[in-house]
Structure formats: structure tokens, C-alpha cells
Amino acid sequence: MNPDTEPPTIAGSYAAAKRAPKISCTGAMADLVRGHNWADTPLGPIAGWPELLICSVNLLLCSQFPCAIFWGSQLTQIYNDAYVSVIGQKHPRALGQSAPECWNESWHIAGPQIEAALRGESIYLKNVLIPVNREGAIENVYWTYSSSPLYSASGTVQGVLTICHDVTAEVVAIRERDELIQQLNQVISETRSVNARLESMKSAEAALRESEKLASVGRLAASIAHEINNPLEAVTNLVYLALQTSEVNPIHGYLDLAQRELHRVSNITSQTLRFYRQSNEPTAVACDELIDDVLAIQHARILRSRVNVEQRMRADKTINCINGEIRQVLNNLIGNAIDAMQQTGGRLLIRSREATCWSRQNRGIVVTIADTGTGIHHDDLSRIFEPYFSTKGVGGTGLGLWVSREIVERHRGILRVRSSQRPGRTGTIFKLYLPFNGLSKRAAA
Image 1 (spheres, rainbow, N blue to C red):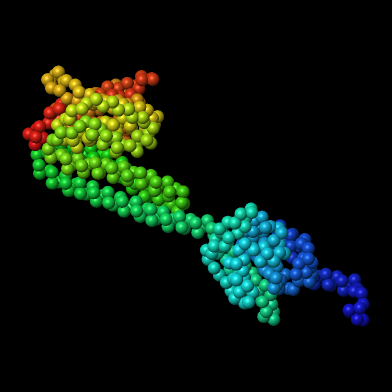
Image 2 (image 1 turned 135 degrees about the vertical axis):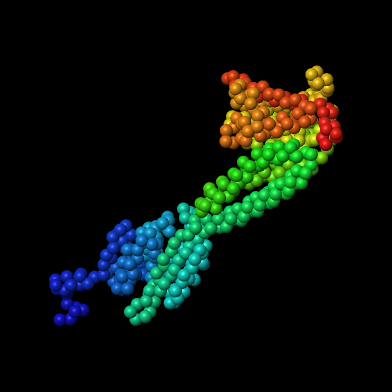
């Protein structure tokens, strides 16, 4: 019997069917591969595929990692379920398509490596930028992939197996992390710089301990420490949190908050150094100048707290004072007013005028600082000038108003307060009276 001319027997047909190559895996892509019209491709029907291709395709389809086979000189493409997310809208027409046609937008980059593998080279590349056409737009995508030759039993390369992974998120995260680390190092450097300035202030305070102004300077230093402690603690905590997380968005938030707090500390320390330099003897200074300095320092907090500032400055004459100390008093009073309106916003009225204190038989300036905040409970009004008494809970030390009153009395002035918590009429008013010549050089010494 001539096998080329005689029709096959039933037994021969059954045996041939058993020997026919099979796509054995299950899944969506396995079904597509089995049902695809391969006769219209260079590969021809599955029944005629070589054993190497069948084994490679079965291995490919069973893999959970994105894989593709490029077979023959035309690099006909077969891929698995995991690879579908890689090619996006190119699926399913990419099945059976030549690789250069499927990846025309990026073949000038990926093609040389695939062709090198077809010549017998093994390729492995990490974090390579290969643009991909997704949803009609070119996206910059970073890949880590390997391409390996598929050898036949005779030792010739029949195709290429490519295993790939989209690492765009990781590459971008690493780059952003590196940028954030640089910013974080800058924040740490600025923190150290602030600490160095604080150490310089401590040295200045130690030198002043030998002078007769020890008590006044010591209380002022306590108030300064109170003003600086909270933002410094916040910076320390934010830096710690940033170092503990690898997620980009939280780090951005932590660094942004840390930079704001450092800016606040820098303003306070600069102002404090001015206080120290100017505290040797009283000088004549305009009230408007002192208030403008304080408002400039508090500008950011005023904006964040949605506070509208209204100024009515009618005092033209200068007062003889240690301007750094009076500036500290004004800073404390205005800062407290902002705190009282921090949650709801409000109106801050600052007014100055000349006045006569009949009980002391002298003339001076009255500065009024009024807010529309929450007000102070009447039981607390009699205690707010006591040391360590605070209406701010754990957020306050109770030193600010105590030190302020000490400074005002040293300048032979008066500091008074009234407040209301009545619905619709909440708020607090501080009135500061300073005589024109309340502090002479002898008194300051």
C-alpha cells in the first residue's frame, strides 16, 4: 500500500488524531489560541505546528507572568492572559500579528533586542523606557524584560520567548522618593540650622545671666521657648513620619507641613534675635512700626485662619521703651487673638490712640486688640495672668500673658482684658496702655 496515494484507514485516522499537537492549557487566551484562524498566518494550522512551538505555547499559556512568543522570521506573536494588560487595546487583534506591525511605535527600541535574541543572544534589561500606544495615545512606559531564543532539536533558533513586566510605577516612585529624600535632607539641614541658632540664643542668655536684667530676660526666654517648642516638635514628628513611609503622597504632605513650621520658627528666631540685640536700653519707637512687625510675622497664620485684620492707627507720637519687649507683648496678644479665631475665622481689630491715665497722671498710647473669637469664660478671666495657667489645654504653657504683664508693668504700663461668650457677641478685647516716657535709661538699667 502506498501511504501517499491510498486513503487512510479508520485506525490510522484515530492514531493520527492522537498524535496531533494539542493546546492543553485552559483560560481565555488558550481558548483564543485554539479558535484562531492560524491558516491565515505564517504559522499555518495548529495541526502542522512543530513540537517545539506547541510545547512553548503551552508553557506560555500556563504562566502567570506576562509572556509572548515571537515565532519565525516574521516574528508572529502569541501571548498569554497576563500579557493582555501589557498590550491594552491591541488585544485581540495582536494575536497572530507580526511583532514589528503590532509594536510599530516602539519597534525602533525593542526590535533590535528581539532580533538579537532571534540570532541566539539572551537579552535582559531593567527599567527601560519603551513608549506604548494605549487608547490612541503614546505613553512613556518603563519595562524590565528578558528575551530568550527558542532552539529546535537541531540547534537552530525558531523563535523568541519574551517575559516582561511594567515597572513604570516603581521607577516613578523611586525617582520621586529620591527627590523627596533630597527635600527631606534639606529640611533636616534647616532644622539643624535652627537648632544652631537656638544654641546661639542660649549662649547669649547665659551671658546675660551675669547682668541685673536676669529675671526679665529669663522670663522672655521662657516665652520664646513656648513660641518655638510647638513648631519644632511638629517638625521632628513630621520628619520621623516621612522617614518611616515609602509612599509618595504622605511624604509630600509631611514635608510641606514641616517646611511651613520651619518658616514659622525662622521668623520667630529672627525676631527674637532682634529682641535681644535691642534690649540694652530703651529707644523711641512708633507704635505703628511695632504692630506692623508683628503682623508681618503672623501673616501666614492670619491667612490660614481666615482672619480679616482692620487697623485704626491714630497715635502719631513715639514711646520710649525696650522695643523688643513691647514687640513680644504685641506678638503674644495678636497671636492669642488669631488662635481664638483659628477654627471659624473672624475679625481682628487693632487700634491705637493717645490717651491720659488719670490714676498715674501721665499721657501715653492705648493699643486695643479685639477679636471675634470664642471668648474667655468669666471664671478664667481672673486667672489668665497667672503663671502656667492656660485656656488652650495641652497646647499652651500659661507663660505668654504672665510674661507680657511683667513687661508692661516694667514699662509702667497697664494691660487689661474683657471678654464675652454670649451667643452672637463672642470675643476678647485687650487694652494696652504705655506712657510716652514710661521707661527711662535708669529704669531700664
